Amino acid sequence: MSVEKVLIVGGGFTGLTAGIALARRGVAVTLVERAKAWARVGHGLTIQGNALRVFKDLGVLDDIIARGFPEEDGVTLYFADGRTMSHLQTPRTGGDDLPPTIGVLRPDVHEVLVSKAESLGVEIRLGQELASFQDDGTAATSVLTDGTTETWDLIIIAEGIKSRTRAELGITEDRAPTGLGIWRAVTDRKPEMHGGIAFPASDDGGAYKVGYTPVSATQCYVFVLCRPQRVDNGLADHQEVRRLMENFHGEFDWIRESIDENTFMNFQQIEWIFVEGPWHRGRVLAIGEAVHAVPPLIAQGAALCLEDALLLAEHITEDGDLQTQLTAFHDRRLPRIRGVVDASLQLAHWEQNPGTPDADPGRVMAESLLALVAAP
Ligand SMILES: Cc1cc2nc3c(=O)[nH]c(=O)nc-3n(C[C@H](O)[C@H](O)[C@H](O)COP(=O)(O)OP(=O)(O)OC[C@H]3O[C@@H](n4cnc5c(N)ncnc54)[C@H](O)[C@@H]3O)c2cc1C
Image 1 (cartoon, rainbow, N blue to C red):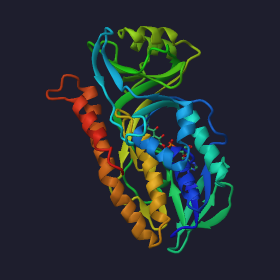
Image 2: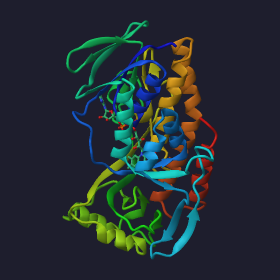
Image 3: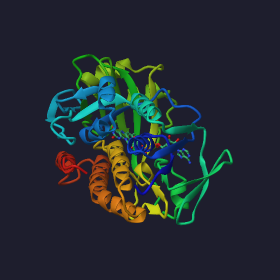
Image 4: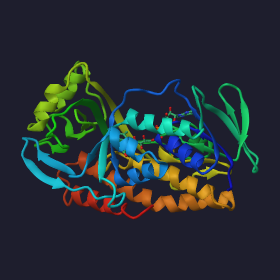
């Protein structure tokens, strides 16, 4: 193995997956996370087959499926008035033995990953950040915010899209707006509701589209894709979401009525980043959303992060030269990620420019997902 002792910075899906994958291969892993405690609330997530394939390798697939809602039937597309437009069958990007997608709450996935990491002996230090680092070619040295200094074979930066260390590594690309904003909420669902996306008849309410994904027998995750600025209209959050949904009918009437001041929800602008050049400098490497994040229009963001983490662990636990392995890892990841970035940015452009001649989102979504069926 070219690494025996590794520091991971960031305890999101990327950092935890890397920690589990490395610990399973015999590496001593320490993970630092800035948050003082794990969040116990959060939004829903569509987990696609290629992410489930990673969970299977980590040994957590059954736990995650048990907490979520496997969806075999794809997603129904609706006109705003509630009529069915078409049905989109999601490809089995993880192989025929796995569901095409599952819907699940983020904190549930997180809890499963934390518990697995702890059971494998990953040392998790909450409330700690990487203050600075040095690399002398034979080891990387970290200084944490508690003042401690330690040396490692590799420091993995899994800080997410807002990473500060990215720039300190000399990576010049930075996060940028996509022109889209999103409201997300977790609310009730009826058993017969199986996931749908509805498109507006005209651009009168400010919503580009609304959708929902079941995340359990009784709950669903709802999103409203919209302009990037939160409208300053004096409405409370739940009133604003209901306003944006008011022209969407059918199942969306019922969802809208279930949203009130007690519903967990928030608004955010959607940003993106794609670092084409090397992700490492010596013995410090960035992965996951620290180096690639896309608008969530084909729900592949987390899946690509999980693939990064697992493949990295496979590369660096082989015998050989670490620098060669890190370069090979980057070169292997780039084409696959570029395909998702290009497709997602194209879809984001079409969302903001309805009526674009030759726009064909269904084809772009299908082609980009089918390209992921091959193992990474
Ligand atoms: C609106 C929206 C919807 C999405 N929906 C989906 C979906 O349905 N399906 C899907 O697959 N993907 C989806 N994604 C993408 C997915 O959420 C991300 O790809 C994934 O969560 C990124 O994980 P990460 O671990 O790389 O980053 P993060 O989740 O951002 O984790 C980074 C962690 O590092 C910590 N940290 C940062 N800096 C430091 C530091 N210096 N020291 C210590 N800790 C630090 C942070 O506190 C955080 O816990 C969506 C994204 C958005 C924005």
